[in-house]
Image 1: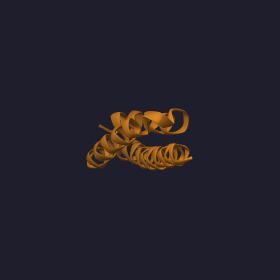
Image 2: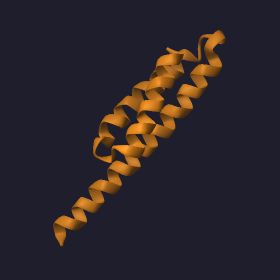
Image 3: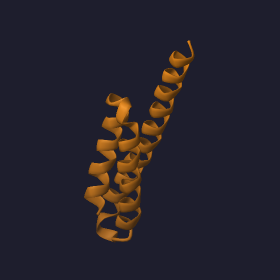
Image 4: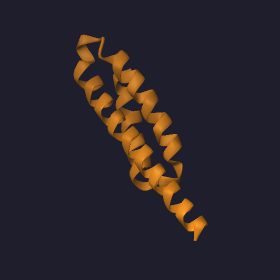
Length: 81
């Protein structure tokens, strides 16, 4: 679960930084990564990897949500003009 959390966190960061229109998908992937990271921290052998996955997933989720809201605000502003 720790490796899956890290992979999903990295994917979420990449989606958040480069594919702003898919921000909702990156946020969902990040939330799944957070859940897997919390579950992976229960295994003492992979606690460090799970923590890294948890941090990456949190950062990716926040980026995706922020950039998605920014894109929605820009589109709303353009629609009003």
